[in-house]
Amino acid sequence: MHPSQWSLRNRLTLAIMLVAALGIGASDFAANTELKSFLVNQVDTQLKGVAIGSIDRLARAGIDPNSDDSGKKTTNNSPIQTVRPLRGVPTATAVTLLDAQGRVLGQLGGDINSPLSPTTFAGMTIAQVNATNGKPFTIHGQGSDSEMRAIALALPTNLGSFIVSVSLDSVDRTLNELWWLFFLISLIVLLLIGLASRYVINVSLRPLVDVEVTAAAIAEGDLTARLPESKGTTEVGRLSRSLNTMLARIEDSFAVKAASESKLRRFVADASHELRTPLTAIRGFAELHRQGAVSGEEKTKELISRIEKESIRMGSLVEDLLFLARSDEALPLTQEPVDIKHLLEESVASARAAGPDHPIAIECDDELFVLGDNKRVHQAVANLLANARTHTPSGTPIKVLAHAGENEVTISVSDTGPGLSEADQERIFERFFRADPSRVRSAGEGSGLGLSIVDAIMKAHGGSVSVTSVLGEGATFTLHFPITSD
Image (cartoon, rainbow, N blue to C red; front, side):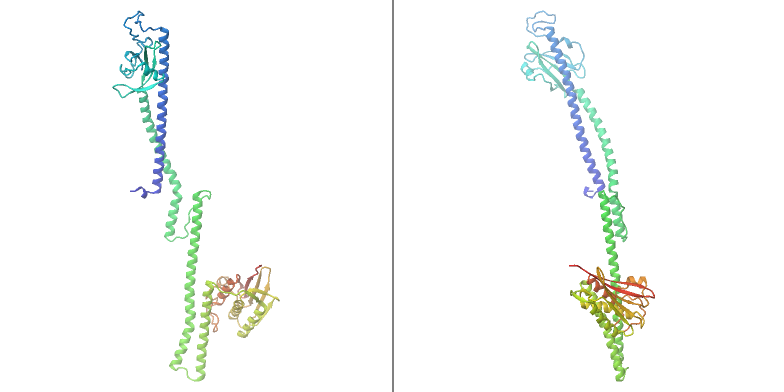
């Protein structure tokens, strides 16, 4: 499987393990290098101590290159062959004596670990010895892969030199043993890091698991699913809060959409029903006339009158539907001062003519104006008066009150009819809603759109319409026009 197809948990764990392995490897290498340097420095200190001690002993002994071991003069000009301070002492440190031309004259020590080959330093002249400046150096043993650390110094007589050396096999063995120890410790530490990182990653990714579960629940249709609340100070907490806010808005949007679709279906069904009723009546009357079922001039006039009334009712309903459709997009209004008192007098006069059985009283402040569309405000008041006449018995008084407050101008239409229940008050401004759907209505009235039109007109003016009612005590519809200061 390609790494890109691995889970995020596995990729994070692998990345942490690789970084940890690189870090541990680098630290092991640095520690091994530093330890080797330390051990070699220790060897160098040992070599310098032995070399200085040997020179001091040779100087105090007054060694003559023309004398033999017993102090007698020799005639072959051969330097001394031995170094007394190391004679017969088994040690890992070796002292090699060379003449001025680099010939090996003798060797002491080096008995421990690996014996030193007599030819290791052969050919090292006085000039080469002086070139080392008395500093330790590393040399490979002849016939062996081992390394030696050595320091070369000239004899006091300057007729030869001696080299103090020691094998680095013990240093190499120590480093090898420590390398395996470092390797074992590194594996254990890497394993612990892997386990700890896996645990931390699992804990850190737990909110993503919650997101996955919540998303799956929403995909299955549960729009109420939410993420567990976390502290807002963390990235996960802020993400959870943002996602929950988004999910709440999505749920609200779906709820609004469902309500809108339900409302649209109900609207279409009610509109179809309202249009079908006058159409059915018109069709029935026309069928009677076609079949000759109605004879005589008077009956024919009555039949035509009924067809005309149903046509008027259907035309009024179509106009109301068109008005509401335009108001959903943007109702065009003219902005002009509207004389409320004059408008109410005209509206009440028309209402009295249409419903003489309902006494209507007016109470209005003098010089009362609002800014708006005179025709639409007149339509809103007329619809409220028509609603009061339609839903109250004959003889029920109606009162129209207009008043200017601090922040708004109000126009209220009150009656003392049967009133509305609280449930009906919440839905009274819905299209085609009827608090009493079984009641018979007169032609041209009672389509269920009048109050919806009032609501649309008030919203277009930046205002609102409200209703207060008590069952058996009547109802009051109020238009609210806000007063805006320029």
